[in-house]
Length: 607
Image 1 (cartoon, rainbow, N blue to C red):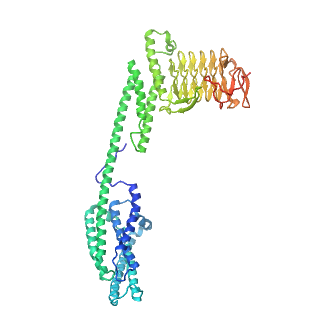
Image 2 (cartoon, rainbow, N blue to C red):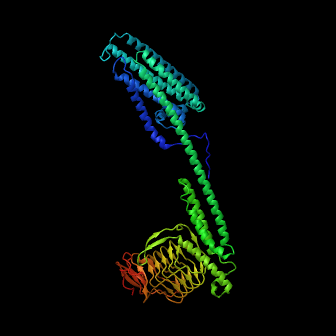
Image 3 (cartoon, rainbow, N blue to C red):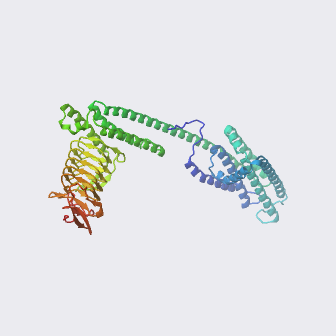
């Protein structure tokens, strides 16, 4: 993780909220300055002339634009925000585009443009002065008691002079602004290095203008009394000072806020780093205990590791930053999977100094060995129990049918028990993504009442003793392809919600599927029942096959040297299925009838 340095001379951070609200307020200020210029314009010698008032309103707005330009150059520096930048952005981009295409003559064109601009500016200033003198003469030549409220040739001439003076003045200001764009970088450097001096000069210059502009306008007959205009200019100058102070205060508060946020982020990162370091220490200690010789320490290490994985996954309150949370999520999931892999590896590892034959004859070993293996049973059963607590949970109806499934904190992780030596019961557990492929089950393999969420993979597994899956629920595929059952295989009242695959499976002794429920696929192709035919129906209960699927999904063509599965037709919902003798079809959309899995809508037994 990178750490951002906080320095005293850092630029004020971008504040999109301030920018968004600042633009409308600047337009309001522009309009307010125009209204103020219109209202405070003193009565002129021509009377209540709206055009003259409009001229002074435009002058006040132009002065406001100059003030905003100063604020923009200092306060926002390179930010192209505010209405001023929007006004000149198109002009500037167009000029820069043309400028870039004229590399060979840049200096010459630049010099010519500056010279032309200065010449035009001088010409406009000359015209302003000439018009002012002419206006003064016209006013002085008016007869005493001249009525400015009546239309006359003299009044029209004076009005035309005033209009042309306004346009010359506006043009001069515009040319001055365009010339300023050529020196933007230098002006920024000067402002950055001498901001206080520039500010003082601006205030002094504004105060001087407060005297000279009214005097100039009065001298040349544009206005009468000067006190109102002087007051207005002083007010604008004072407003500039207040606005500058406000901007400086805002910049200071923004800088302090940024420094505070940076410190908070640094503290949060330090806290996360310390927390993760403590997790690593706990992990190392718990793994050492799990694989150590102390039985009690090994037993307590299992919940320690499980809780550590939970602690890693509890990351959402560590940061408010989206990207940081994504990083924390990735790391948390990686660390939690590592812990799960450690626990699964322990399950896959054969206990020290024991062989597969000894595990097979577990009960006939000396007492000392039985005690050691009993402790191993407790530890390994505890691992499955901790996994079960964090796996999916279910809402069931009164007949045990799953209505809703709620994912657990470990539901999305991988659990690899392949080739594991299992010599202990795993009944009444929830097993998520159970990969038991090629596993070996010693003693009785007891999965009675277990719930397998997602695919349960028992392909090529070997059950050396009895295998009991009674009352178990497979919510997705149950894969027993090429599995070997050397003793009794019980699937009483077992629910196969999706595919039940027993292809190429071998049953040495009895295989009992009484009251089992097959909802989608039942595949016994090339399965081998060596000594006894499989049982699907007795007086105590009958296996059920869903009529909501295709008849081709039920396959009972066993291997040539196998005891057969005697099948007969049964019909429901207008479809005929070939299913084991004595079993029934059911309508999966009908409500359950009892806790054994019977439905209210079932066919007659297959005969």
